Length: 251
Length: 252
Image 1 (cartoon, rainbow over the protein chains, first blue to last red):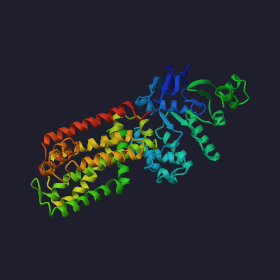
Image 2: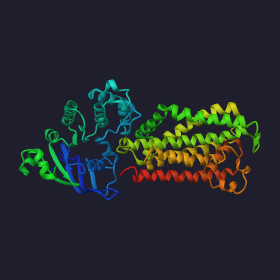
Image 3: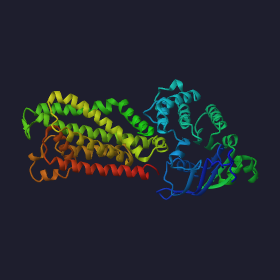
Image 4: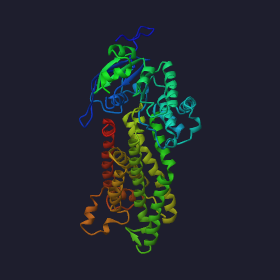
């Protein structure tokens, strides 16, 4: 793949570069096998696939949440387990995983601390995030007392606290109502417009088609297809992305 | 101290403070009741043990028991909850070294145990008049106790599959070993073979090291006590360090 060049002629490292990534769980399940994927910096990239296709395993591997069996993962040119790579990635997980002992503001400030932010900077950034995600009124509310929509917003705000260059959103709109989904789309689009690379997994095909520059279809732990939504439709002779999905990975 | 480690330690201490009625007040109250009930009521019947008034004799063991249980149960429950609710992911994904994560999670229990120990002493010293004969030995014994049981709590929190598992270790392992470790008696009063069997109890050495620090009296050489405690502490620290370095049990 031709990488975009910087002004001084150096090639920009891709946001994500996976080489022969393999993950076999302790129970023998092979979740990913020799998986190759390159995501250019600044792209809005979608990952689609049925449950169990390996999407969450892939994300967990990138974010050092599982032990990789084999292969290489590089984030903006850095090994994914390095401190540099970790600082560059923000993760909003599929399941709500907020610290039950912290309130909204503490959730953001402590996250900033984990990522090396100074206390004063983390407080300032937390205030900004609470403004952006309309969480100010809930600043002192402990996370178990938040509504489902507020928790989703807080997850996204937490992922963005340390200003990552790549944000991984694992089904960010799963189980949220239409209004909040539109609101989250606006946040995510705004984020992408600032140059942040977005890696999005979703089961909503129209969401992927609406938001993503490129889409990868995953099935059985392997990359099945990858292109723009239009390119996929053309390659599969399909009228819609849903038809592509059915043909490529089965319904 | 890195900012990540400072933040994680701060989070663990904040948890202790937010739950202070459970984490500090309850263990202080129950240990102080032991001192009042056993020390002051039985103290009239049991005049002295090893040349020390009974009400003062039991204080080091009870302080030890309260502190090691606080350190252990704090870390076991905090780590288990963080794993169970998966908010530990926020820490595991962060740019922190594995030893920093281990240390940050361990320090909450140590801080809680120190708070419990200090509060208990503030209450017990005026009532029992327990002295501190060997402060350096006391500091060494307390540090070893805190590191040993903080690390053990982290290890159990990592292995536990349910909340009951860490309670099981506390109620069926730590508590019996502590009671049988000479908290309320000197093992010199035990008949054979119970006296010899008591030497196989690791908590016996810990209780005696702390007791020597307070009273200058011990059922066993203080060097041996500190040596056994140091060896056990090294094992517990190595175990938790291995878990964080390899990601075993923490990462699928």
